Image (cartoon, rainbow, N blue to C red; front, top):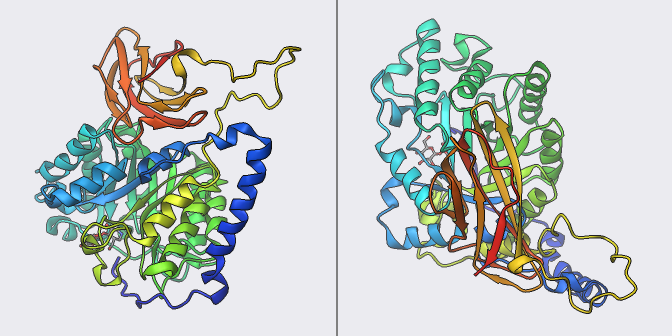
Length: 472
Ligand code: 9MR
């Protein structure tokens, strides 16, 4: 993004500033009423980290990561404790991965992917085709030569990471800031179809990755740029161009503030049949004003079922591309800011997502049990699978029974010939046959009746039998 925006955070109204206190009071009153009537609500768990709390809501919480900070103990401590999705901040860009034409270098990006995999985190790939951060040789190409170079780059990079990427930003920042059209760039000058060619190429190279269009200044529903991206996604869906998600970067400051219609924007994109992800969130400012805006963004995402996760663009304020605007959740020493607490509280508000099988009426028995029915070994697990020719992604929901879980293990068997390629939010015992998936550090504790999700990806046929779940 090459636009310089004004800094500061003085745009919040007095009414908005006083909102948190009112909300807390009414939430407490509401909680007391619910506790009196619905016993299960009192036992819902509340996560103590961003990743665990987001997972309880079926979402992820991620951060941009710089490979050269993986030797900083404070940085890595926060990363491993709080986040379950990472985006390489610069290491997967074209200039980093193909510095000379046809010569690929994945060293730094691989370090981040390895770190993520070793710690049960997923990876957002960023970015395959972009007018910025191109290697010099690509900047000097045009026409058919550039189009072929782009296709080859996407094929090579997406194939290198095949099976390891949750979602790719296939195309980044292709629209102009005003006027409702495309941004002029060497890629745009290869022909208006360059974006759909990029998506089709990425799909062929990694059919399991979700394919996203990612941009900034697409948060306000009334802005021309938002409408232009919306119309492109609508057109792609109508014509069968493979697109699965839209990334809203959401870099907010006084020149580009959080808009009151943000939730509308998320809802309208989702209604096109794509996931929505907040991909580079940072909000300049400090104290309660900044915290309120962070909370609003989280609540907006949670209100839209296809808003599948939030990524902040760095860990500590000092890690930010806009460090002077102190836009992140941790201060330069790694301490949690009020914005952190606002995000965690927003993620935890309303208890956990109820288990999908909870009956809405009591079973018809004349002799109802006085304690909730025991669920096998203290937890249950259920599978949701997306199978395609040659591969699959399975999501597993672990639901606690009548007592809270302090650790869990899920058992299932992969069919012959099937093999795991990637696992998130859990640690697998192997890659084929009968497998046990154990919780990772941040999601072992699940409150009574609460749930958490993990997932895995593999080649071959997905498991279909009922999984076992064991507490402890
Ligand atoms: O945070 C990134 C910074 O370290 C780089 O210098 C910059 C170069 O373009 O890119 C930053 O990340 C950008 C992201 O890749 C795309 N959206 C805007 C981000 C902030 O500029």
